Image 1: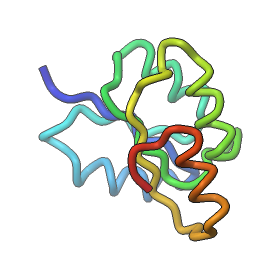
Image 2: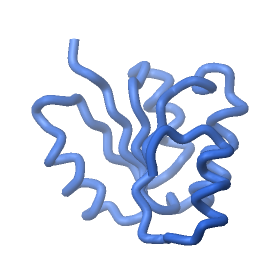
Image 3: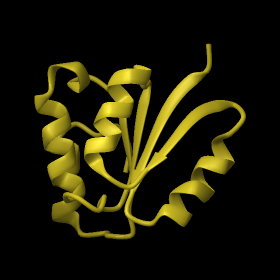
Length: 101
């Protein structure tokens, strides 16, 4: 069974490009809405969420907060790819339980 990755971000072309670099080694779903990503994670039993900047329907940090408060995803590994480099944002992301930034 392939390792399942959900890739979530605002820019569809960017996340598709990242997704293409992960295939065929991984089964990848590329989405722009957090709600869709949560549903995809639930149905595919995703092994990893890669969060690329803010999705279209909520901030990345809010997305992480919702994810960690949802029992199904409380321990799902999250990697965050971001062009935002502020120390406060970085600390908030790690406080919310991301594995890598």
